[in-house]
Length: 251
Image (tube, rainbow, N blue to C red; front, side, top):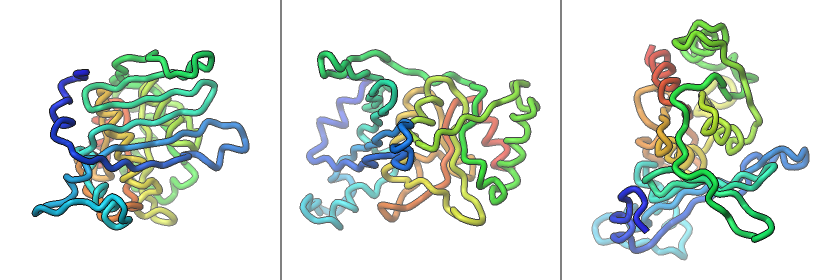
């Protein structure tokens, strides 16, 4: 079925390569705090040039198949395991949410065409690393926490420690999710680009939001990975909030 004019890229696709984070937030599982699964789907052949073809039985060949920028994703999404189980995904023509009906054992479309609010009043990040963050990002946080940002509203922090839960709340209520680099522990951020931040950024952008790396000028979807587990500073959320943040990150 046609979904937002995206069927053309599927008809030219021969083989698919999927990447997964099977249990995001696994450290929360024993405390019964929400966890999730993140996934992204690429055209496996698009990672090869000059007549080469991927060998889907070879690990190094599979790695090459997913070492593509997020703007080459065919689909992305997550499952959220919480008070309900939700599947939220996009094929690139809109973001849609399905809730597991345990009586029927089926996912039911409950949130069609999800759109992130253009501005929120919540920021989500692990402030225990803030001493190592850039002065520009710290100035931004100080402004929004003190009500000195563009909205004039004091922002509040909400941080679960499970990316799926934090990004899902950001999608529903608006605001900013951030995992910046820090000088001490995570000089390139703590989230893997290929199977965490790029699929989530793809989903957020197709719900009307924005994403960026630490330059503030480049979308996460334009970052080209060189390794499967490569990490990258990560910012995503409401379009107006991201525009405001980008102004600080660009100095």
